[in-house]
Length: 77
Image 1 (cartoon, one colour):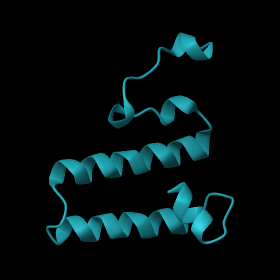
Image 2 (cartoon, helix red, strand yellow; image 1 turned 90 degrees about the vertical axis):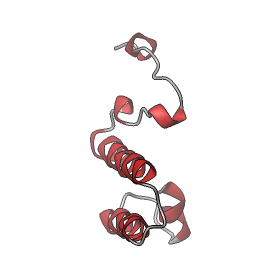
Image 3 (cartoon, helix red, strand yellow; image 1 turned 90 degrees about the horizontal axis):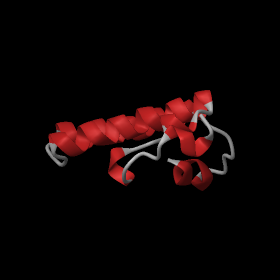
């Protein structure tokens, strides 16, 4: 998603870019080109990214797809 923003010359979060990407994911899934499990994980990752951007909380960005979460004590929390 960051790359999508940079590719159109944006340095700041733009909900339009996210909405467009979500539409592409929905379209791919509903046309049968994406498995349900991958679709659900992708949507969750999008939500986590948006949450991180809006709140600035790093724990919003944690992902089971990218490995285990670090203990919150690691970040002093």
